[in-house]
Image (tube, rainbow, N blue to C red; front, top):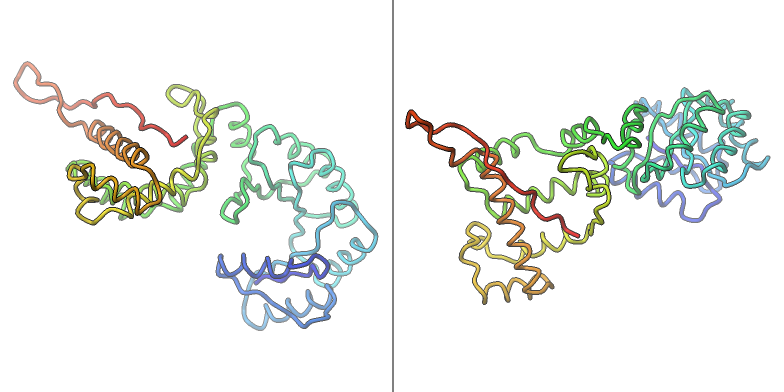
Length: 324
């Protein structure tokens, strides 16, 4: 159960209500005029009565320490005796975040902290500094603006990203969380049978978008071999949306057989998706490249050996063009 005791910032409680609806978590609203302490106490009682085993109290944030806020937080801590007190630090604030963390820790003795806006690896220094001055662990890091960008912190993985070694383990975990296992097996069969359609292409794009931004995904790849320069690639996230719109503007027959899409059909698809014929052509080109790549990965068309039998081998392939 969630409760916001930020009665100062306009729409702060409304914001938590919206996020809670997205993650399907109940929110304790309380009574208008309740103090932060009273809201916290009543929310805890409600959580116990309704058999919720976790209550998260979202307190008011401050850019600078003030006595009124610290008094309020100490009262809540003394009254509820929470198991965890997590300090949320903005990595972009640099040393300001470190100073705030040190003062909060002195007054409240928090158990760990969450570092947000850690999208860039250069901001890893703030994490090390806060840990150094407080002696408390980093529990979670935020790599984006959405709630699904909150990740459990692994120091070795952050170090790997900073050193350009990628973070394959986090990438695998994201894939396991978002990719449907049955659909993955079905896709494997289609690749082997060379029946991968534009509908499948669209479904794969949707799966990728669920994993997070392309920039985050590329940041998890090691800067070696074919992935050496991917960290410098500028990604246009809107391109994925345009690609999906183009495929959605096709008929079911066109999505299952791209070879029937002639000039007049391309004009109609472009008009229906709010794109240009050139963009439709580019999307079809990317799909065909992906199709060729998958056929190569399936090992089709192997060389004939001296005994007259086909030996298994993987054809060479190029990565499909990334949306720029």
